[in-house]
Image (tube, rainbow, N blue to C red):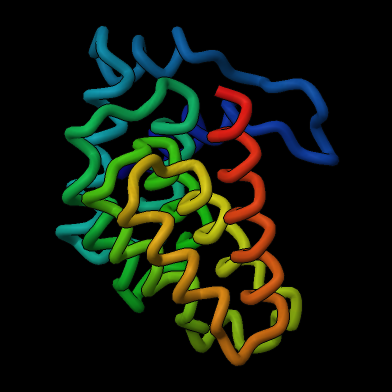
Length: 176
């Protein structure tokens, strides 16, 4: 990815320094000379994964967040969920949660119990929280079973979050 590619993609990001975006989705599509942003995001994500390019993963996930995900992302996101060479596991867990597929349950469970070295300082377990929330949004008995297993965790945070998601699921089942 060129510095100009990076600049165009980063134009999609809001920041405390720049509360309004400098770029637009249309500018990204024009810059990359494509019409399908989802396909662009997927291609960028696949390339970054193949190259073990941590910055590329972050940029590709920005594009994917802007244009949305399809089930075509699943295999690449599953690979990234356990890859230890990047730092975007929270975004990967959230992306897997957006797909709401039982095919992601095992990866989300592993993500909920795993503490990558770079997150060893995080006593709030943000990665686990995102993975557990994603499991809560994933329909089916597989996701529920994973939450039940997480409810027995040694970590109080993991236990409480899993219990909260199980309660949320129960309430939504009762409401329907």
